[in-house]
Amino acid sequence: MDATKKPLRIPPEFGAYAEEHGIFDLYKRLVSDLIVEKPEEPVQYMIDWLKRDSSDVTKIVIIGAPSSGKTSISIALSKMINSVLITDKELLEDELSKNAKDANNLIKDKKPVPDDLWVNMIKERVKRKDCLRRGFVLEGFPQNRSQAFQLQSYGISPTHAIILDAPDLALIERQGGKRLDPLTGDIYHTTFDWPQDVNIQARLVEPEGISEKDTLKRMEVYNRHITGIAETYSRVSKKINADQPKADVLAQTLSFVNTKGRSDGAHTPRIILVGPTGSGKHTLAEQLAQKYNIVNVSCGTLLKQQVADETHLGEAVKLQVKGDLKPPDNLVAKIVYDRLTQLDATTKGWVLHGYPLTREQAENLNDSGLKPNRVYFLDIPDDCVIERLCYRLTDPISGERFHTVYNPPRTPEIKSRCVQHPKDVEEAVRQRLTEYHVHSEDLTDFYREDASFRINADQDPHTVFEFIESILVNPVPRKLGKD
Image (cartoon, rainbow, N blue to C red; front, side):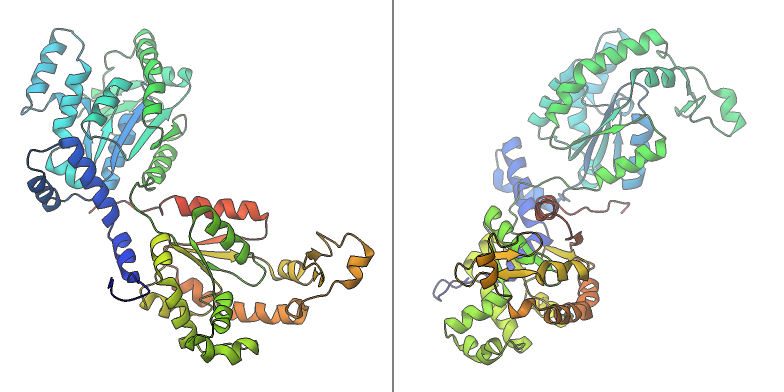
């Protein structure tokens, strides 16, 4: 940005590049880790941090009562997204960990493993390169709120916490049918997951600790702690009904994991509302601008403002605007670019409506660096548009707007003097609808790969706004898979 030139401008590519490559999130994670680790050499720590693969990997914890299926779901999920699976068994079998040796000695003496020892083992494991690069699925931890707080104190916070929930009676029934393959360590079930291989069937044994008494005791411990864990992870957790087929549980789990949590990094809305005349673009833009303090840019209003201000671009489009004709695309593009690159729009964000109307205009907008991060297509039947627009009336004395169906004039006197705007004549409305439909498919196709969403605009305006808002404040879903 050149501070010697007025008005000040920030190139639009800056924000788009930062968002596309996650610069704001990267900075937020770096500062967070720096504060948690408190290295003696912070500059060298940041250099090393940036050298390793420090992308925002998925960190998942899967928690559930005994027999809720957390083991099978954890195994399947880790394979699907190519993340490291961390279980209590793996932690205890770590030959390189002194903490693991201490924990095994306690288990041999039939003593409980303290929370801080479990946390130290988890800390050692997740700090290794494979977890830093691929992320991890942590099964069965944290076991209580104390462990959750200790993990957070070490900077180990999950991006997703999955809580598998089911009725106690269903879990007791599941637990009684468990069978263990001593050769592979795989768990099967006499009713829900019986192996087809007769050789595996022959060597299955009943694992220890699955009696009803043992199960009830473990469930009591779990139920005592799950509320505290859920409260600790309330922002990133989802409760999933585990009393359904495994495939359905896995599908819901994967769907949740594919959603990104809200980031504390900077976010500048760049919104485009696309829809036919009468779809509510103007009202929605005003609501978004007012609530989120972003710049409301109406292309039609922008052209009239240029003409009123007698700018050189306004003079160039003056005849077309006054004659209700379409100005040349190149001039409209310059006017829109000039407004969207002003300091308030680039720092606060913007909502644009009335432009682009064609694929060529959309391409010009993207080529100029003004790439939106949300595009909303407002769908509404033509008959509803006719009903909305062609029955509108205006009182020329008070300027008040009426609708013969939804908001009729209050008195015969007001009704007698009300007039219809020439643009609301049915023939004119149908002409604008036809022009919109000619280009709507091309616009849909152009923004298909971007964060575009279709919305039913033929419903209460507050409902439409709430739906738009829910998409705006939440990150766009992503797809996870193997590298």
